Length: 277
Ligand code: JB8
Image (cartoon, rainbow, N blue to C red; front, side, top):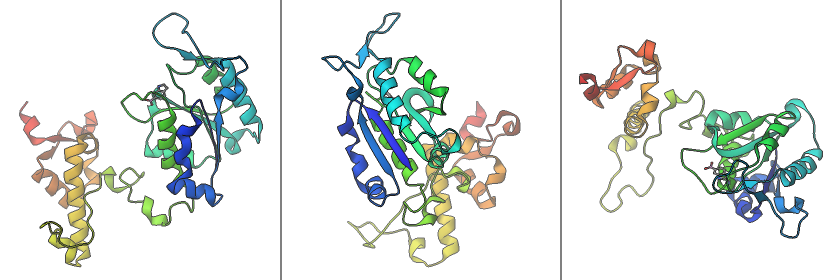
């Protein structure tokens, strides 16, 4: 896979030299180009921003540097279709970046990222490149960064670990909490390692029992416990059929019951305390 990043802060992308992504690059599994947007400015002050039409606060990134940068980068090896590049534009107004989208992007050979600063990029730039290639405007979460570079690091790491041969063990993704088809999309429970006692704290006995069936059940129960606590939305929208009898027993212990309106509302489960409302 090839990645290109165009930014006014190339040094912000230094983490791409480290760890999983850095190693994938060193092994030749990933080619990364980081480009300084100011290389495509031609005035004395290397201007990349200007005031917004219509007024309002902040500055908007200008069309010409982005257009010239993208034209030059895309000209090097461009092909249309499935072998061609896609543009990934981090923005708080994008579609949520999910594991499903990470999988989709990991199947493309070439990703071009355009992390902005200020109030973002003049809309015409995105509209122009959308006529030539798929454009994914993505948000990594409901909070606002000062610029898109950190989002590029997030997307890159999520995508790179899915590439064939990048993670040591091909098994390791199937259990990911958000892997498509993971166990009803539950959060993972706690993990433990040596020593067996630390500051007076032991390990749940079942993990030392060697009883694989009981261990799997305990892990599933802990996953249900964490998911109800931290992501009740994931439980609510899971059809009862995705849970086995023991799951439903555990959900009941945790105070969850099937919602009689489930099939119609898409909210299949609710907290038992809420039933009274
Ligand atoms: C300026 O929060 B974000 C994000 C924020 C940004 C820009 C891009 C992304 C550009 N602020 O995902």
